[in-house]
Length: 300
Image (cartoon, rainbow, N blue to C red; front, side, top):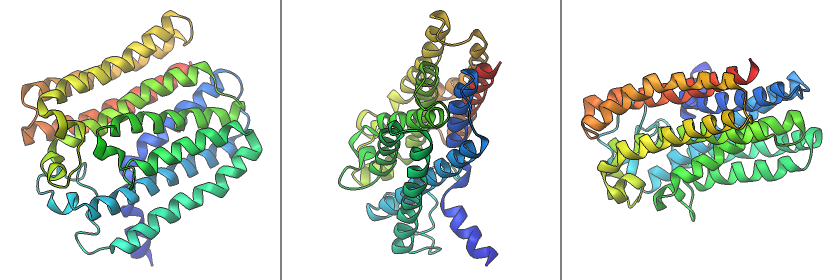
């Protein structure tokens, strides 16, 4: 029984759920900073079901990447960061089991979301639907947005909704600080997916997935990553300058230390496997550190 549970849990790629956990904490910190935090029970439910929604999207992504053949063809994946869980390819789960599990997880979110709507207000319906649609349409047909070169925009939208929804549950409205911090953080979540496309590019191209890296080549990778980092920092800086964010949110700029280290490796040789094994985890660390420090800055 324990082994079965561990298999289903591992299929959700739990390590990547940390980006959603930090996103929810960022939204909750915006509510606390506005002295509008209402309920730890609601906060716990928000965290739980945001994680379930992300888990469902991960599983659905594995299913559709198995259908288009990109995961099976991916011999250049950097484990455990890229190329999916490979549970289907390794015979741990069937395609049907994976699809059913993914849609079950997404389905679980709906009744819980309606409860949160009852507790907080109808505006959460729009936020929740946008977030769920983005998570599903990123991989799923007929949209397959990641294959159309707009995967990063989809991720930005999805994680912005994570932050806004978490704030809305507490405040019963969307605060300006949640919009700014959420957008800044979402850019770095998109950066994680953007950099992860590099080792997967050959398999993606063979499967017809026209990601940004496939479309424009690896030469855009360091510049695109730099642009996403710069955009996140600029949003926070402008927010501080305009008194829309507290000055203490400048703590998030400390995330530039690992970011610059990773970027230096990426600019040196973006396709080198040894470099990418440093760049990819550094990109994840930078994203999580930025979000956590931003949340701390809001609370301080």
